[in-house]
View 1 (cartoon, helix red, strand yellow):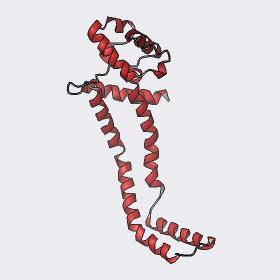
View 2 (view 1 turned 45 degrees about the vertical axis):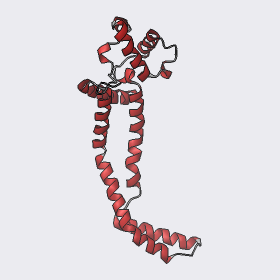
View 3 (view 1 turned 60 degrees about the vertical axis):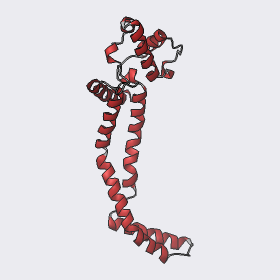
View 4 (view 1 turned 90 degrees about the vertical axis):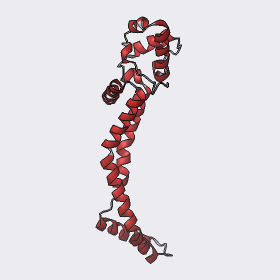
Length: 185
């Protein structure tokens, strides 16, 4: 799984280096994945349009069997609806499949976005722990450290004390993401 995080982190890091702003990098990152998933979205919309065209025909079948609730009749009704859908080329899975593909990717992206030191700066757990100690965060479990907050504190530390101590931890301060957009943090 770490190679997937590294892949997404590398893309986000590249956008960050090009734009100079983490927020703009996230925007470009989102646009990239929107473009990648555009064909899936088009397929889903085509499927929804086809279903809208089928609704009147399905309503006729349901009206034909209205009021009859025995098992055999319900099976016949379902069979006719399924045959109609197959004849017209409608697939219920083609509407859900794009969402199922996107969901794990969104989970990966969420973790990459929340951990800029790990995936943008490629800092190890030891370096992150040293940085947290340097800026006064007492959390010992690196996984529980809010890295976005830590980056802000590191930037504030660098502004007041210089970057020598940060460099001594093993992190290149130039790799830190800039959370400012148009001069606002």
